[in-house]
Image (cartoon, rainbow, N blue to C red; front, side, top):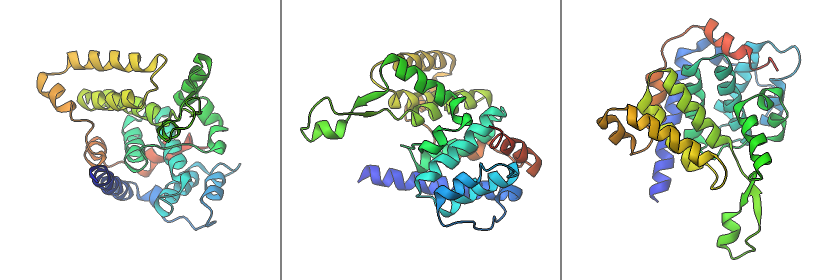
Length: 254
């Protein structure tokens, strides 16, 4: 019950972020004519050859607005955040990926998205290469184990939440918000697989950040990351359509 309330609160905060985004970026959030009732078809349409970058961004954002429960909403938000990361716009990364983690904390990407060059050249794509090399790309299926099924039942490790939280940590550092970065790395640690390099990597970053922060900030961070409504809107400010076009330009670049 407590978890359900927490999820509902996160969803409300996420919707507030999307509303703020709509107000700040009217050019991108302008109504895009509905091309299909199929979210997957709409997502793929954003990557068709010849589609202007700003229209691609509008398609992806409209998909999130009109199909928030679709499995493709994860992909749309991830692409928008990755485009912002490539443009070195940490404020935009926070816009899209804090919303992604609030609305879909276990976000996964569809095969089409994982086939894009945008994905293959991303930190997430690199993480999956390392996981496969380490032999940790599959993890025990906790649900199957709880049901008394064979222990060797495994499933692919979903690195999306871990990678997104890590990049949010980096973005908050670039925005001069080390306490929020610490919280993001704590979330990345919680999402990391039990075996391999990742937990040690995040523990080191958490320890380094904690040593640099005032005691009051470190204590506050133990409660976990701020709600996305606070964190994202704090980092964002009014920006013109030209800035968002620059971010969106990377959406179609690959």
